[in-house]
Image 1: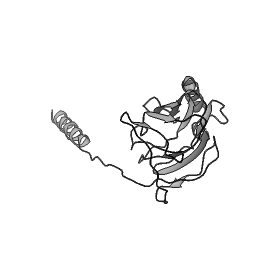
Image 2 (image 1 turned 120 degrees about the vertical axis):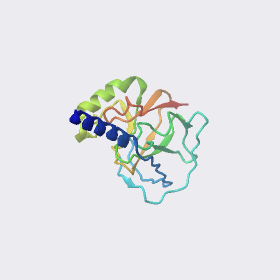
Image 3 (image 1 turned 45 degrees about the horizontal axis):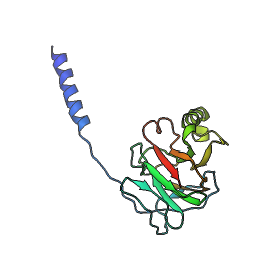
Image 4 (image 1 turned 30 degrees about the vertical axis):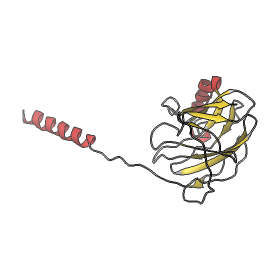
Length: 189
């Protein structure tokens, strides 16, 4: 009987302790920029490096668009499986510089642009490619642009030219992340 009471007590105390936690918000105003080749992963930039000032439009429905210089700032949201926007509007046939910052404290992420209909196949091939290929099939013709797998707190930049039309997605190909919500619709107009 004593063992049952002790076990019950330990379970209750464990439950109380697990319920206690802290919420921490990360705030970093740095917007690092580095050059990159189109369609290829770029060199990471540390979050403490200087950045140019830019203005990116964010609409009421959380849709983001590039600034006047063609810079599009995208980030993960803390340790959630979300990008900072569910919707991106890009002008057709325009060179876009994507600045992707991983705001997570412990998760790696990437930002991969694909045609919407290719999502399931690209994700399946990403898993098959494995961690040595940064969860992305090498030379995958279905991938229009991609960042490398970015470590927590780091940034990667890519430059690519948007197609003239299409229904696109930006996804994180790390296993489970797109299924967990790391997907943004991209409209090209």
